Image (cartoon, rainbow, N blue to C red; front, top):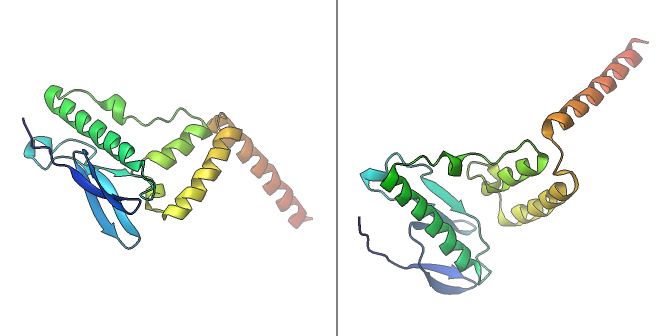
Length: 167
């Protein structure tokens, strides 16, 4: 299937820049413009997932255009590969959670279904700083072990509080 390639015009750092970004959609919001890659509307792609991918970039950075192009071209290529092979792209869509706090932080930051993408830019920026600190300090810890220790400590504190009230 041959498609016409049309360049997208995106406002980057106060200038309109032409990008080769197939599937790029711009949604005007109160705070500015949100960028999304969207799958093709053709019936052939009706079952393809994800339908959209939110593109998180700083539009005040003139170098953000390269990231936008890369993300759109990657998603477009995956969609076309899916059409060609009707292949099993479960590996691409599989969550990248490996049981650690660090992987949970990365999923929160990057998953389109996460609430992180709905936050304002300045909030996202400060959260990214904190998540980086969490990943660097305790990111390698397994959640199962951490949760057990936390719950046991909480249970002991609760038992002490109950005993003090009863006495």
